[in-house]
Length: 335
Image (tube, rainbow, N blue to C red; front, side, top):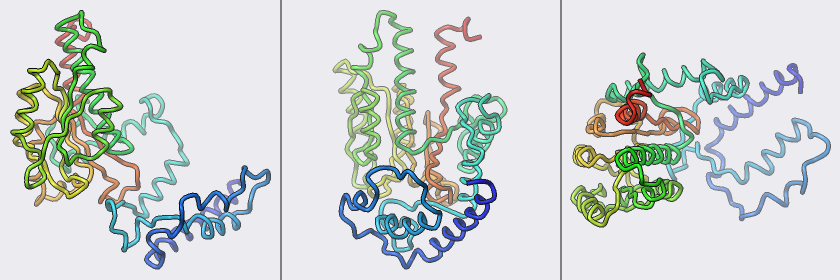
């Protein structure tokens, strides 16, 4: 495909997408197919000769669409509202064309700096404390993850690294393995399954704290669990508070959980994947009160904010607090 054909087929694809979205309410929301339906409809191996563009589009309608769950249908009521918009689709097209890999500033300065600035925009829209923002000093700042699952795992691994560094600075004879086997993380029994998965990947114990009649984490139960585990020689280090649970959109009370975490020196991560976008609205911002106690905060712009999946925004007070922690251990080297 050369540039000339790309222009032609690109226009046809835009028409196809626009027609799909305009007529999506006429499609069956959930596919009426059995597991394994697709394999018999496709060649056993990749074809030696290319298909025409017309044949590919026909195959999409004949083979692919019957197995698609139409998340953007007005009759789709499962899971969560996946966001999408024409501007976001055009932006995805441009991103695909540029194709830069933003793993460092040098790899693509605009990519790195645009992400930093946009994350600050989101932080300001949510009225997050200044420590969560990069600003000109660059002490805080957020990054985009693929999902809240990745964000929770990243926060847990950062918290694990922080506590290992602290304990080894206090007792150099302690090995990393000896510390990790005693680490304990906590979340509500209403937290998303990805929190449990983060604990498994991070190799630490995770304990579910019972919820109250409002399906919020019982703070008294959290305090009891902390005291019990410390008495047993375990090391509490990480707490996940959920704002907008997947099951029923319940909210943990940050103003109660936060002070306990700060007092006990626990990393507090806020998972606001589902409801976080709503805090931009002044009438819902009070549900985020207590965020100042947190070490990291995550929500998904790909829910509600018309940004295509996947775009999960995590705002950590990570750089600032980790730097302070390292400075306390080896001030001469860091300065």
